Length: 579
Image (tube, rainbow, N blue to C red):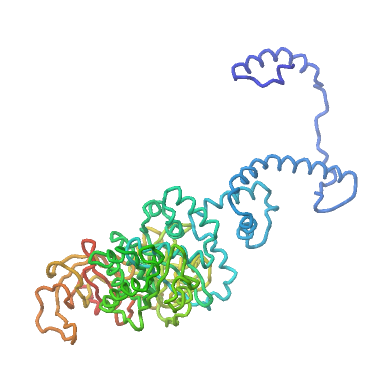
């Protein structure tokens, strides 16, 4: 056999072989025709026309077709291994899901044929990974309903309650029942959760997308998702229940129109959440301070063996909660609605359950759909408190439009820095729109400002009507929980709309009688728990705020210190700065 046709065992060996061949090549080079005519291209040759443009039945064109067939066969052969790998990845997936995928990938209806098999294979391969990062992958199902999207009322629902009450699980179950998360994704989560011996957590993974949240089973950031019913469009804000992450929960509650207080009916769990240090009390109070008017109390884990859909346990939880919620400021007849459910099995969330014959009301999703409309002024001044910001082909901000309406290419002002910005694009729950009304949760891409120049708590306003900003203000404060007395010079952390700032109580102006509302004539030297006072506060930096009378959403605040909520209050008057 010719040594040139054999594969070398090593590179050194190949060099030796080439050295031996060199001698043989001399004779072969000598036989070449050196005086051959140089190649001159024929400029007047007939122009080449591909077969798919003109179908002429000539022998010439037939030969071209043959050549093309050979080349396509070569391409498909090289692409074949990719397709093989793809089929291995997707063996676990049900076939009915497989057929649906191309339609989701390309709403335009274009087929993969245009892009060649290797491209198709790679796009399909990447889908499982992208699903992990963005759990709302089925979101593109919404765009077809865009023309009538403005007709559906927008409502923001915040899920609050003690840690491990089942907030994220209920959120995940609602997304599954309304078709926002497909079965295949949930099956994948279930497998992964089982590997970690946490099979009951898989539903919460639809909202807890962070790896740390999944490992510990505790929400840290406020999770966002959305679902639609026949009449309304809901945004779910899944607040963290752990006491270390209450500041995040306040940010979530400040965007909500409606709160769902999730409590666990399991023996011992309800009591822990409701006792002095539990978050059930604190969250209900913070939701009221954040301006939530309507509260739905979901008594979760009713399917637990210690409860077993018992009416006695349900009534016991209800009796303990009502007096407290009344004290916080909710009206038990109008503002509060109790409902039993099970987040893990989905009982009484979408369909009524046979297990619970004593409950005659509507299931949770139907109840949300039947709620009365919220009154919102779309012609008021534009006010959009910023919750979060990041870089993505420009500066992107997230927030809820509290009042007014905005549209694409509009000029707005970022307060308190007075930066003039332009709106490049608007996304309402991941669906691009040209304009948005009050109450919508928006993602805005801005021009004319850098991401570093924005902080959560800044506010977008229209040029004609800017919001107020300052450092000193007078406020009415209710001291909720504080061991000792509070005197002028006391420092705390102020949470007002989405803004978090250090604040100092500079002066106590007067005490207010809780029952009559009368103000004391003399200045108090201190205030203690359960007292109401009017005080002057001064923040460390300039913040945006309004008086409670003019704009309630930006005039309510909470004071926190040492991980506890100390006071709640409302802004009465803005004090001009002395130079």
